[in-house]
Amino acid sequence: MENNTSRRNAMKKIVGGAAAIALTGAIASRINAADDEMGTALKGRINHSVCRWCYNSIDLDELCKAARNIGIQSIELLTVEEFNTVKKHDLTCAMVSGIGKDWGITKGWNKKENHDGLEEWYKYLIDETSKAGFKNLICFSGNREKNLDDEDGLKTCAKGLKKIMSYAEKKKVNIVMELLNSRVDHPDYMCDHTDWGVELCKKIDSDNFKLLYDIYHMQIMEGDIISRIRENHKYIAHYHTGGVPGRHEIDETQEIYYPAIMNAIAETGYKGFVAQEFIPARADKLASLKQGVNICDI
Image (cartoon, rainbow, N blue to C red; front, side, top):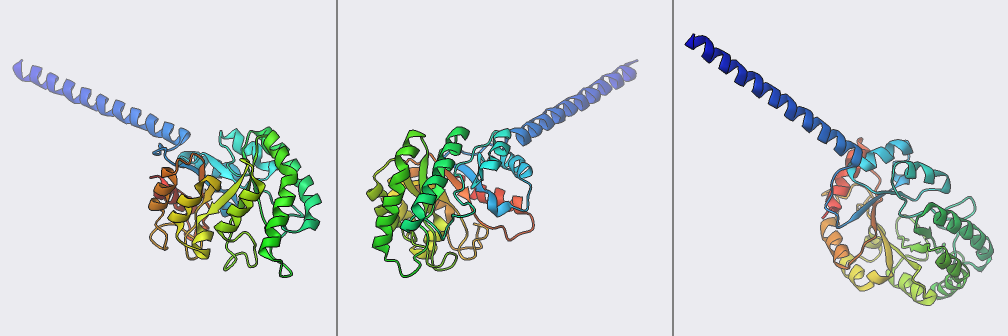
């Protein structure tokens, strides 16, 4: 009897232990499923976004699902036709595309003959951005074609953009000009130095006009990234990443140390978004995207 009783008690302990393990496993599975659905918990000092064009080979719905899982809150540089897709996934668009059939990086606000067409195009984009509940709309200076002087181009940009600023202010939309490099990727682009962009902000003199500080582009053009950010952060509405050289992953394969830059951005009190805008060189593009976000999640 004693041996049988001991055996039964032992079996109860084994069964009870197995049930507890099974229950723990079930709870863990549910937690993991919830993490997949709601997104990875990040530290919260940086709001993360990703530029759509770098992942054009991935269906936008799939990119939205992956973004949520990684903890990204925004997919940007979207066209108006793509707004509903990101909203369906409870994501935002931190920077709306300003490129259209007739307008883009090379053909922008630094030419007077472009102003009427750009005014019409941007008022349409301002309306759509506002209706969607988004805040930022990108714009471009255009190229220096025909040896256009930088000072003349600056004045022309300011004159043209002032035509839409009161409308943007009324609709609570920010017009944001991107700083791009003219050495490697965008030959002859005019807004290629921070000082030029800051001077344009001063001429326009509106809280709704600021700069998109692309770290990749400005590392190529001028370097001294952290100091430039600290000196000019009040004129910056948005940031982009990218590895130098090559515009690929932002890890140890390139020359910029992004954690230090992210700390500098956070220390300015910045509450906007930082968008990954590198072109993945590896086969698993989403793994590279997750790595980039984790590097910037200081």
